[in-house]
Length: 478
Ligand code: ADP
Image (cartoon, rainbow, N blue to C red):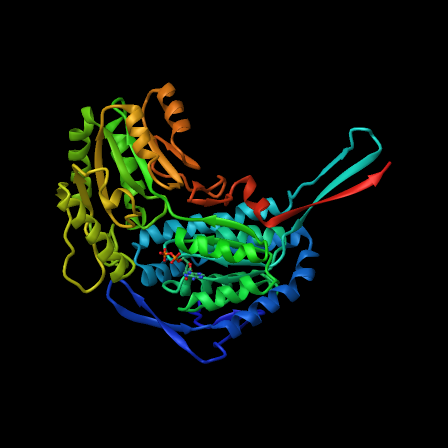
């Protein structure tokens, strides 16, 4: 049975914040408080990073198989407790239970993937060109890592960072998002039960992230930061990382184009957009943000999409049958409404949705817009809500220019049955990931990440563990 933990987790022990302060966590479907959680400050943060630094040498010295087995056990425990974890996530951030269950499976898989990677950390052995020396290349853990996660995938964003850090032999200080601390604390409990030694993972929850994270960044003890969140905060952390020249992995915002060519399978493209747009109520950095549809098929596509979007059941995610939960907080819901109002003022037409319902809860209806002008704010902002703006295109080059007219470059989706066009457009769009005739790219076996201001580095896949490893080379005369 899952115990609901609400305190800090430092050195394998649960404890309140030194100040005794707590902050409230609420259910976005009802606006009702569900728990209070320890509100850590710089003092608690210092204790956490001191612990991580003190634990680093002994943890780095453990056998890869030992670390791998911990991850295998944690993978199994997550699946055994899937219902409890899904319910915690739904209650603190709103996603429907069925989606939360999907996230549990996805999150657990990062642990299995990195359990397999832990025992495959390689190296290299070669000789210098003149044959005079041997070159022995080894991989070592980077050292204590700062992990910061957002609220939209509370479990998976945790396992995606903790998995490779454990596999590589790094200790961690972890600050989950203030809106969703309960899932992260439940995960810590599972890792402890799976045999993670005290001090390897240290969690400080807080509703005032600045002082906690600055303490870690300025400590001189942390060697790496892995952050998922907004580009704005990512830039702030990169500036802080520069002071101590810390390794940095950044998964930042996106502004994904979803491109439907004239030759696309329209039914398949609508199916794909329902996933790419509506997964997590649109609250994902991978969410389709701008839907470019060839003018010859836009009416057919728009009609089919509107039918699907208006049929979705909106409600409390914990109620059976709900397909669309609330947005995470009032501020997020109001931002989405503002973007829609602005687009409509600029000439867009609402095909469905478009108006905030009465409370309680922060619900927003699935919305389809046509006639959106390229200069509308929602073309240049992450919508982070269930709104699909359709933009017609005639000319491929012009569409690519529009698709790339953004500082972000995380993912693009492309629907076409023509292999030449698929390869040409995949190369032309400036993104780190392309979904070709699919609306889902996230997978623990794949390198997740973006170009431009969407970030630095990749999570998952073969390269995922590399982000947590340092290369050391030994020169040995022959
Ligand atoms: P979002 O808009 O999705 O909430 P944020 O970038 O604000 O994205 O939040 C992502 C994570 O960054 C959260 O864990 C949040 O607490 C943290 N965060 C926010 N502000 C700061 C800051 N000044 N320093 C460090 N972390 C921060």
